[in-house]
Length: 292
Ligand SMILES: C[S@@+](CC[C@H](N)C(=O)[O-])C[C@H]1O[C@@H](n2cnc3c(N)ncnc32)[C@H](O)[C@@H]1O
Image (cartoon, rainbow, N blue to C red; front, side, top):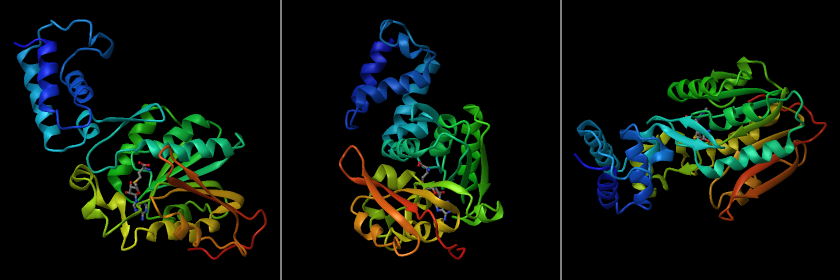
């Protein structure tokens, strides 16, 4: 039987080619044993059971196949909330927190209707519903698996002010009769092009769902639809907040029609200095756009 210290050091060496072997070895040890995080460094000589040791090596070998760590642990933190994650649903990325941050700056903190299109595990929607208990959040996705996980995350976080609806882009909103009723529409949509997909890091390409990441030939197809159709569901003076990809800013700016629909468009950079979120505000008074 090995000690905690021995297994930790074995794990670190097996995982040495990953960017953070010590952290990953620790996370996998915590997942395979009954040790609590705050005790991890206190009892290095503690012996682990054979079953714990076997579990640990099994998880290390899974990780060595390239399976992302959150798919092994089943959890990924977003906005300081532990979200349940499973293969087939996109792993939330830290840069997506910028959407939450910007919306909270713009919110009146009164009763508002907020829609999240392509909710995935529910990370944006649940974070907003928790931060804004007086708001009504509507979370949609076309993928059943994503919606199931988002519902689980909402119930684990005990957020009663969120409803879920399945459908592609705006179809669920149409069924809910949300035309011209939304204060905010947010989305982290697919924005990778078919051409970029094979060049993505193998860990993403081989394990994360392509349908959550690839939008079409140019990568801008879904964002364009969001910009064209969102005004039919936003109140006058309502906001669209969309995550975008590196280098897409200028093309996306050209999608906004300033003559009769949008009053303001802005882009916000992430911590790497990349324009990451596009914000559009509809005119305070506008003619009802045709429904898409
Ligand atoms: C990039 S992931 C974002 C997931 C999550 N919101 C996040 O920030 O991590 C895009 C999500 O949009 C969903 N999706 C893709 N195309 C869609 C469509 N046409 N209508 C609705 N949802 C769509 C995918 O199933 C996926 O869950």
